[in-house]
Length: 411
Image (cartoon, rainbow, N blue to C red):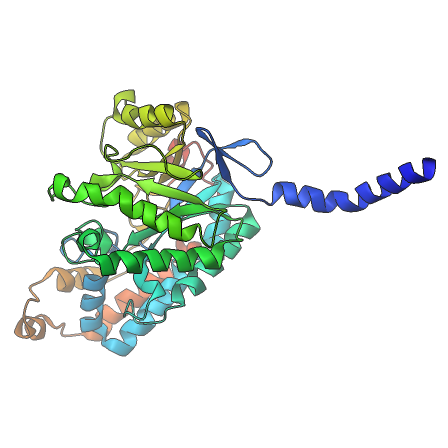
């Protein structure tokens, strides 16, 4: 009997490290209204969005009219030529988010990030100087690996879907949410998500997939488009589940992720419903409808984007979310010469001339020729200087903003 007991103890001691690993290295999942970590404890996301990295945005380049990736790329290519533009984007994607950035995010006390991406990174379509269907995996694998090392969780966000899901610059589309009324575009979206899910099905650093960012802007008749949203989510999720039963499907409402009235009961056991809020009051009534949905259907809710405001507002809205046990990812992590973000970097010399060119009249080829700078090298240097400035070692924490998030500014 003693020999048997000793054998059992020995087996347990040998197996303990593996049992512990299985317990602590599993997937974040859902349980009722909460997210649950692998050890069974409630988990609340607190983090930021890597905005302007895989999807350049005009306002973060200090542009106003030139505000989507394809328009920004067009202006930069006109200034630099195709070869230097390709070199610019390659360096941009390598410099803007690095291992040092992820390490810093962890040091502030954040536990997660949301990564917006463009579907073109997974196709043969030209995007930021390349047409490599595996480029998305190459870029994301690297960052997700750094996050895994740091103990940071990741939400993957299809910010730009085939044909455009929003109808504004943020989806890099054509000014209308063509996705919803096109069977071909819907199928392409489903196939891309399924490919992504198959690739990451065993990746425990990933919490889930934010299927469509801010679908169906308020410019369009909601009655003619909103009814397409939940059925498409169901199709995407059903296809994802054929290859990945581990990760959470994250579903945003229409009209900038604000309207959830088209949603019925949750159709998948691992779902989160997300909303975005900017420039609102910081009072309970602003988020009550989402809390009501959570309570009615016993499902988690999450604020995927908020921020872009002064430190007082950032603090007050964060406190409101925390008091209601709502996960959040503030927008964005990094911006050029701006205090409404986690960190900032300086605008390079002569960058005002880049802005002037991008914002000038360039409708026809005659316009482009007339707008051509007398000294292209000066503007080229400004653009490549920006790539040096945006490196983490040249960035400055926005202390007030970070402390408003209840975090530590560090660095």
